[in-house]
Image 1 (spheres, rainbow, N blue to C red):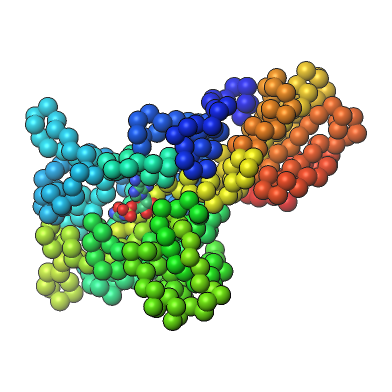
Image 2: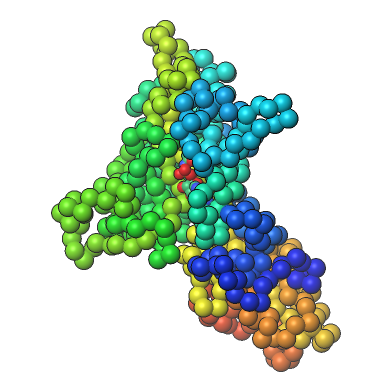
Length: 443
Ligand code: 5CA
């Protein structure tokens, strides 16, 4: 992409409403635009990050055996009356009437609808287990939308729902999602720690929240420092195998949000030097809730014994749009955003320092074409701005790699390659710079 042809409406001033770094930087860099409280437009560069996150989430869930579908954002109120949640949900739910005075709502979550879908089509235990997921916009009329996309009113969620014959099978499904989450967050380039959690309006008695540690986080968390170093299951993970040892290893270390924190246990189980008290951003939550929805909504299957069994359910959310903000909170510096490579809007920023110089322009075009041919996302700053402005802008946007081409270097036959995260720079020949990048990684 050529910056001269791109739509990256960066702000020059710090936006007054942004209280935390990710909100400020996302507005400054031109990733999002606020349309109403807690409601945002995803501008082209922001949307690229969102799409990259979605792709990793989908890839890992598909590997774990979940099946993607897409349910509507609007739901009938009657469905929620059936599950008993319509009144219980309260003012966070956006309630709507259509022209026929039918009551609708903009879905804040989808347990009720997915249970109705399951119940209509699945009748036998032989079809189980089933896990259905979607990546869809949600609306929650939050009392205090804040911190940009971290607590929005309209937000993008990945929500998955598992259906099993009994509790033991449902706990296996829960473990599959738990382990998939470990891998998803690691693949996004962040560390999210599973912590025991309350179940709130979703219900049930078993739940973990996954939190990214950040001082700006909304939740106070208490955990064993060793949780920061636990191994993430590798690419050879077998989702069909026994995942209990992995879940046991992660849940054996103390990690809890303030809602369920038990100070006596914390001090008993965790040696003083390993006690970590900090704050975190909840990027995902997994729930096992048994028959909470299947009972009132009569979602049952015939078992091998010929009897009817209410299915055991779980639901599993990831805040896809929240993750964009959380990833920024987990890695930024005074110059701007520092994207992890897998989710950066572009992997490489190519900076032309002397756009008026024909030789420099030709070298940039050549390198740009080589990178594109290698399948590398590249943003080519071919604008007429001053060098200082270009550097500051590229640092703010936070692309993992910068290649800088100017007249003086080119006369010596070199370009400069800079790694954004460390500031480390090396000089090399233009062709060697291109050859460092492949579609899948750096050589
Ligand atoms: N039905 C379950 C799981 S499918 C559910 O709704 N879980 S949740 O309430 O925990 O939401 C799932 C994830 O969505 C959260 O972990 C969080 O990352 C994200 N999320 C929740 N509320 C917001 C919000 N207001 N803004 C941005 N992301 C949010």
